[in-house]
Length: 143
Image (cartoon, rainbow, N blue to C red):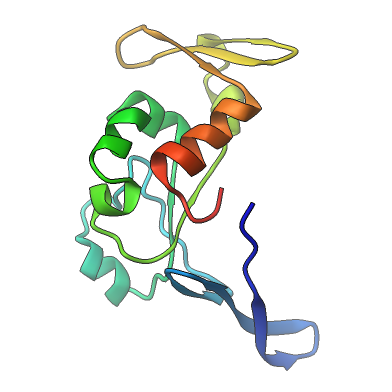
């Protein structure tokens, strides 16, 4: 697991500003982190996302697993190349969909099996598979 230094730049009372130092760039905190569910922020080019002040974007493991597919993203050079974003990227675990797509999933002690809301196919997500998708296939900086 990667670790990143964090530096505090200013304090006032209990508030602080700082920067999370990653190999792909600093993430200023507090952070503005647009959601790029499928690897891109809707209706914006990545240069516009940067101009809006974002240092990092968030991708959704569940949605990327389904479409375009984590293995396909890896074949295309990883999430950064796929999305044309050269800054840090964070991916979530897919856990929110366990709750939000309750009617399309079956849970057991080891993980969850989803029925795709796109085409009805089934997909297994365990903690290990989630990390494999995020770190190995998508190439997220923070997962």
